[in-house]
Length: 250
Image 1 (cartoon, rainbow, N blue to C red):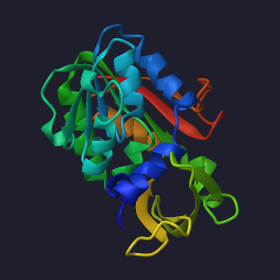
Image 2 (spheres, rainbow, N blue to C red):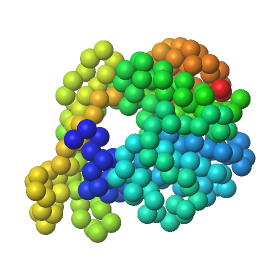
Image 3 (cartoon, one colour):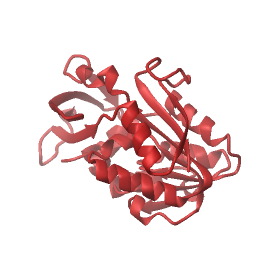
Image 4 (spheres, rainbow, N blue to C red):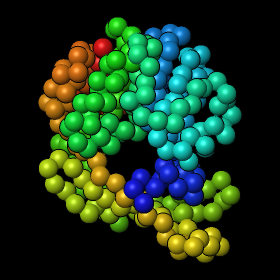
């Protein structure tokens, strides 16, 4: 299944267990907190980890995601009543409503086609107040992160809330024209009996845009870039963690 870790409730639970609060969330929350009491949009909010953290920091926040299973998990968490949850995409965003918009967990890379990415940026520009900030992360293609997505380097064990341990690894299936296709493999313990077997798969294709491409696309959408960092401690691009951490203004 495409992006099954967001759409299959069995794998949503695994995703939540594998992805607790981290320094990445600290980075995004610190940027949001630079605009106190703002109306915040979390586009591609998933299971709501950062969304709920933003709400707990006294911001009014709207979480938008197309994956119902992920939103169901988000809505069941403590504090979820503080958030406006919306099942949808950027096309349904209201005009001039948010002081800050965030896209985290490399959501920007899910927009594979250039026209889809351009439409998303245009929607975000439309939804932000004048001078509102857009903050997102995308992997720097110069870091060639996908070369570590193999059975040895990507192998991991994930402990679920019930104590069961899921074994996971990632397999790259194609690299072409700035895109990387891959499959996540998840093997559940024997006592999990699924009609489709003990191993569940999630497929995806991500776009790795260069810093120059990011700058050009933001300029075309009417954004002014404030910073592009290379790491979660705000190192310059090309240093740090192999990321492109973007802060721009509408």
